[in-house]
Length: 373
Ligand SMILES: *Cc1c(COP(=O)(O)O)cnc(C)c1O
Image 1: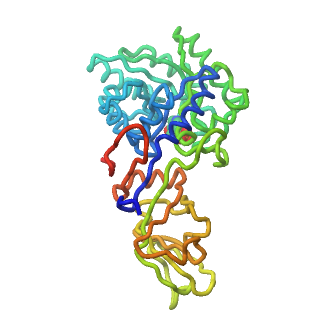
Image 2: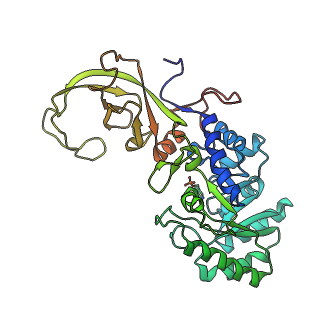
Image 3: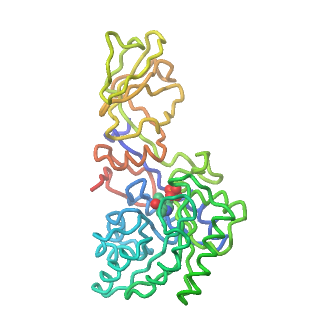
């Protein structure tokens, strides 16, 4: 046992820096900048700093609160807001984000007023939907919106962007990347602006980038999961040159009992309105650990000991079959069990105030139990 309370997320910033170096090198070789995205950890300071140490050129996040916290900690890299700007937060956006992603002329007008009021110039990227059907104006509307944005005082339209593989699962290709390049040409002609930045996408861009077919004009990528978890987001396989042991979840056994594998008695719904099926595997050694669906997406947990399986969870209790665990014979109440979380699991764990965040190693000291908020 480590002396740290459970449940806890253990972050390994040195390994995240290693991943960042690898991803950044690929982008820099293409002549592109990288915005490091730490939102899956709620922009944990150790993760942001690990990305900075790994050479990212900007820090990006979908929440203005995370950017505020990052700026207030003294990070000097440009900060980019990823989620389409919200009008009600315009004053904070121009204060804490140097650059934001936008698709609404009305919202950019409000950002313009906020920028003028604050005596600032705010940079915007106009998002274009090249097929994934999440954010962005349809390509045939881009010129009109870019032209409108170009007239706004306090606003500098620095380029165009697109996002793929998030809603529709569309992958980057010659066609959709060239479309972004072509739309920029049309916007350049209409506005007379240079529009130097073409922000081509998220971690899903990596395989296409590595293939050498990414158009040279695409000069920015916004990378989160590939750096934080070392995954190829097409199929979640390990991305070459990265590590996957960057984050661990550690929980504690609070009950350890032998029980039958099928419940006894007449059955209705469980606590979540489900009627789960049970396979009769006889009497098994079962552990209850101190974490539940309030803290994590249980399907996204991968036990370090592959002989442990997750049977299910309610809000606060997760039930494991530990009959075949490597250390089943010596396992005791109070012992720790560790898992690797996937993106969805880490997102929930990061957001749960009930889960401590502990930084292991790394160049700097952080509060040992960082909590959100
Ligand atoms: C979250 C997000 C990213 C980063 O995505 P990853 O798949 O984690 O690399 C990039 N761009 C936008 C707009 C995002 O919302």
